[in-house]
Length: 115
Image (cartoon, rainbow, N blue to C red; front, top):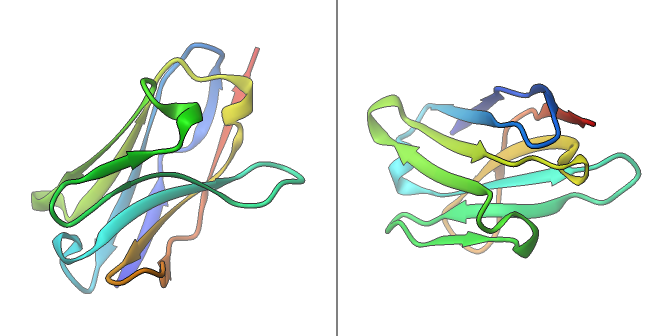
């Protein structure tokens, strides 16, 4: 499966963005889908994931602010980000897995939160 992430940009503190991850090649419904991010000078970290069955996990720092969801008709996964903070600034990646390892990655989209 090939993944294409988009939707990044510049947003002010407290603002919102929606990231999209479009898939080609295979239906995303067969995969657990995740979002990761990598801030400048830091390692890539897990943000959120949604399983094939719809089970959702968030990292603590985004709970209550970010929402991950699927749209099977669009073969896409989204990350709605609200009340964004400076620490959310990062390159965001979507990824897919069918076992315990994320093997398929999108190219990343840059999100910058300014005060």
